Image (cartoon, rainbow, N blue to C red):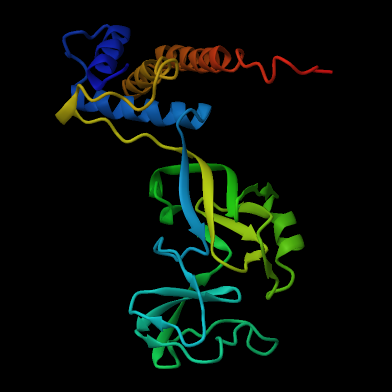
Length: 281
């Protein structure tokens, strides 16, 4: 298993700088962490099933369905129709749900409003799950699959490109139901559709970036494991040589990095038997 100390040794050997004459440990540590991130980006090797729910507030707190006469506390989040609201002043909710959206009032209010004895402030749409609000936060790089839990069923959501998702599932503002699709918008938002009609726990299959290794603990074991640790040193050496303006040598290291990435992928994706008892034809 790789550690920062083993990475430093390997990179220095590649650079013929065993005594640290030309590159400091601090500089190479930055290059090694860049290599670790690049390896994850290119291979998707570091995955995590993140558990959350939808609708989810912008802060990552699960929202509960608006219920007439329910007691809410300051800081709670409730959702009604397609919008999530934060309780800014606790109390008892009224007898009529927030009216938005309607034909004449399609957007939620920009200012706080009274609901029974409570005060609510618009927070976010129910259809969005922000990557920053997931347990992995800003370390979340990509979304591969989304499952929602409905009773005893785990239901995988279909993926649609944003243009198709927007045209097919966002036409009617008040179209709510059990989500069947998801799409990515930009780099930081998952959209689910239809807009959830109730709270659904969900399981999101994600690629996450590695936590940086630090010189304060050079024996810390890397969360990336073999064979995906093998390309890291070559990418670090590439960055070191590029900084030195030795562009020819840098290109050689970059080519070696690409070869080792492909070798790692080939060595892990060739040994799976889908079902030894079924007819593949």
